[in-house]
Amino acid sequence: MGKKRVMVPAKELDLLTVKYEKETIQAPHLTGSILKLFVRIIEIPIIGSLIISFMKKENNMVEMLQNTEIPEKPMFKPEFPPQEPSVVIVDEEGKPTDRVESALKCLPHYDPASCWSGDTLPSFRYWKIRDFAYAYRSKLVTPSKIAEQIITLVEGCKYHKAPTPLLISFDAEDISKQATASTQRFKEDINLVKLEHSG
Image (cartoon, rainbow, N blue to C red; front, side):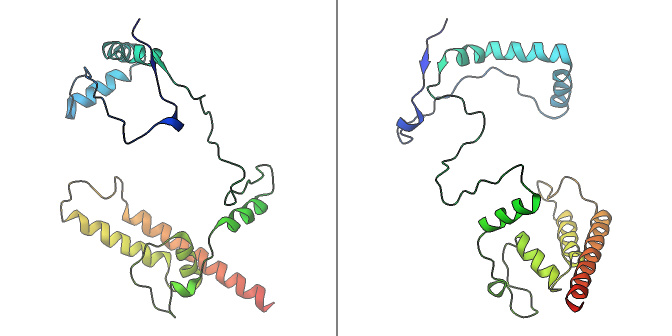
């Protein structure tokens, strides 16, 4: 049996005084096709579990966990102080419309005038869902136009030979098709709203 280690409670921990102690890990250094082969072996039900158990034993992982005493109780789900004013508890059994309404009240006030000026697109900024929704409903831009810009950007990156690809999977035709369908849906929604107001 190894020496029992008792961890300091989180409330008493001073991060400025904590020093990271490097552990010596005994494990193979694998890359490329050898790594792929090793992963396939590990995924074999019986052999894989035996290899993992052996590696854990070699690095004293099981012993380290067994001999470490954590003072805090395990947290099985995230907790937060109920008295916080910014936290709104939504009834999980309630109506979806009521839940959405409660969630919307938590969002900060959105002022389109601060982001848009007339019919012109704003200067560079990180667009959020509200920005896209407002722009689509106001006909300032369409999903198809946004998709075109993204396709142009991604395809332009191909010629620069970046060290890592921007996207793992990219199908320009599928993106264009989805964007066209989205543009049509927004168009129909806008026309429906106009009919309701005129009626």
